Length: 319
Ligand SMILES: O=P(O)(O)OC[C@@]1(O)O[C@H](CO)[C@@H](O)[C@@H]1O
Image 1: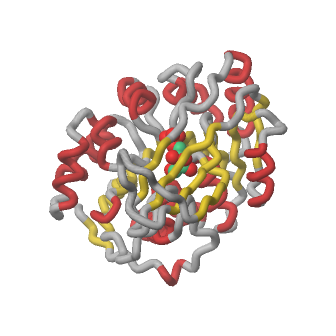
Image 2: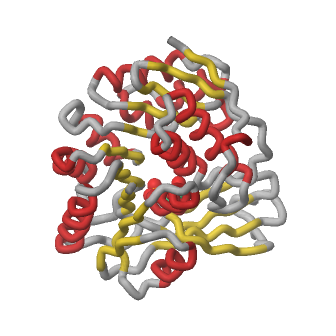
């Protein structure tokens, strides 16, 4: 079983605009769609559709519409009882696939909810192959939350993945190697935050075809105890440093309709390939395959049950 934890889940509301977003102007909406989101929820949905037993853990009031929305997707959940309503995150989708995301802060969590979340995840970790800690932390949760959890869950034996950004990511970086996860999945900017280098420069260089700085930063993280580093670089492809192998994959040419959920789908693809015992090369191919299909779907569209024969990334070994 793979367990995901999303401390700040969200109803993802996608407003499809008939014309490009006019900042400061009046914008009309063509259609609106709501789906259950939050990084760990997305990961669990893709895993379950790929045939791997998965469970999404998140705090929410048990009667929150978000819980019903999740049930409608069939994803298995453990709801940690909380009081504040689940946030609504807005995606403004331009006709050309450009997305503008406006993420709400989410409800403040109290100490009792945090304790319940920690004990729920600790119980589930005992029977899990992976525990995947995902997304931003709402108010009331200290920046060290993930770093503390990685340390606390280590004796349970499950492998641990972290996909977050900003302050919680910086807190994790400050605690390496003691709190080193088995897997991190940063984008270029987050890799910069983790490795203490300029992420915008990493992304610029990768977009120009030079993945050298990304590879160097990812390898530096391995040297600091992180098991594997899967870096998603959007249209510039992806890099995986894993099992002492370094691989690059180009981004398959797809018509991008919404990048929301693409990183989560890439992470799920990596885990799906791993669950089949496949080597790093295939883990990266599956990651990129899932990520690119997600990017081709509107809103928080997820690749649910893909045929691996359709993965078209070109891979290059870099070591
Ligand atoms: O605010 P966070 O937790 O960083 O990100 C939340 C979020 O943007 O991440 C998912 C896409 O990765 C969406 O389903 C969701 O709206």
